[in-house]
Image 1 (cartoon, rainbow, N blue to C red):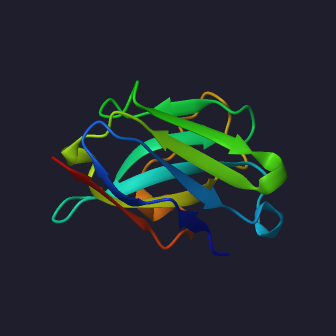
Image 2: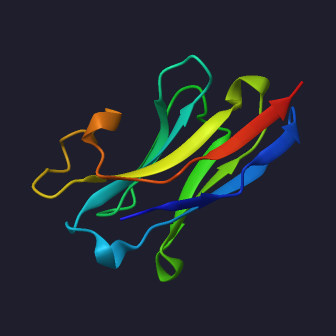
Length: 131
């Protein structure tokens, strides 16, 4: 199953971008899932920046993007968006969307954030913020 990202590009500091991730939900091998946006800058580990839970649309943001990024989804289009405002040079990275199986987890269990636990990935989209 392949996820497809789009919307990356070059933007100046303080600018905005909206990333899209189209996910073929009907092809998933599980019912409940979280879709997470990760990013990876050169020489750094892949880090999760935001996720949305399919069961209740609960969202989470890393401290580095809280208040600037907004995750949302359009079920009719099988698409999850990441709206990124007030972009900073340190936001420069390849952004990936990925899906993790939540079947059997309770709402009290944290959404897995280790990339190794994720089932499906997109190819990545480059975001570059110039200073």
